[in-house]
Length: 115
Length: 201
Image 1 (cartoon, rainbow over the protein chains, first blue to last red):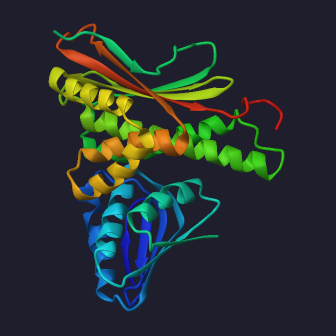
Image 2: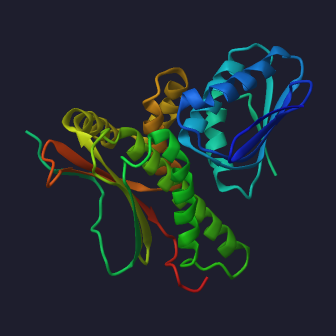
Image 3: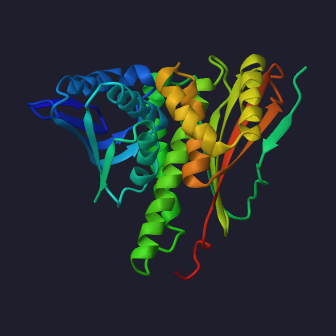
């Protein structure tokens, strides 16, 4: 399992590079600081045959630069043929339902599972 | 010549309701070192308001309290990030964030110093934002910010406040009373409360 940690967040990627788990609060200073996370996300797109799952259920906070980072990833995924992308979200984290619907507008095939 | 101007919905500052002001000296630490303080301050403001919101009364009151707490935290964080990013470097004018809790709304505002050029660019952007439809602009901005340069992220933060948190935004551009070549730029977000804090749930 790969991981990427900061003071307020933890990101774990499973060995087959298809499930990414986010925990904590992402409030980095602009796109340069988000670049390593975006790079790691883009690496999941090399296996288009498998569903890619981004588990945000324990991600309590995301700033607007973080929204931009996820938008960039979703656009990249949209432009790859045959990508099955899913976001796992929590109904008890108030920003999840609101912000993820904007990502679905970018990629109508994106699945958001709210639990 | 620089003139003072108000755009959007600012509301009047009142000392009669619950309020809190934090001020940061921009010269005491570089931007990168103080970035983590944006999150700490925003979390503090979000936690602070919950004292004045009804938390008992079942699931609805609890979830409403959580929603308002998150909205205040998000808005405070975005406004502080913008104030820190766009503050004129090497100018000893404090960056401030102010929270006001009235019966039917919460106001969060942040201020920073800006040179004439920066203030004018921001004012032009604000005028554009006030003329457009916020929902359309957000949809466009999400796509554009994913493709374009860094500065559009600030637009996305403001548009998110309007569309996803129902905030009314206002801006004050004021000539600084001492450093007349500087403007103090204040961005305010008014967050309506469906029920008054302290009212029975």
